[in-house]
Image (cartoon, rainbow, N blue to C red; front, side, top):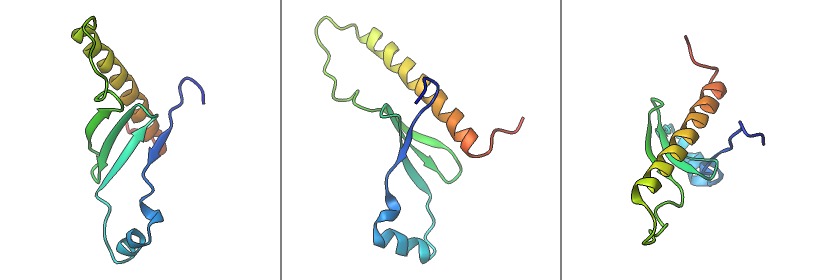
Length: 100
């Protein structure tokens, strides 16, 4: 992958027989959990709204005494916004682009 590419992984919902049966019976998928480049996870709903944006692995990181909380928050924000921007670009391309 190049520096401008991003990998999107979704959970394998339809590998389970019961899920395939639900879809055949008319069940509609309304929310999809997505992991973006092993950096961020989110949920996309049937209207395309993103929610539950999270940086992966950041919850478990313990602060040390010499760590600046503001610097850590700034770094997390930059990482999340950069990953989100790449994700939206990839999502838009995969859905046929954005109307002007």
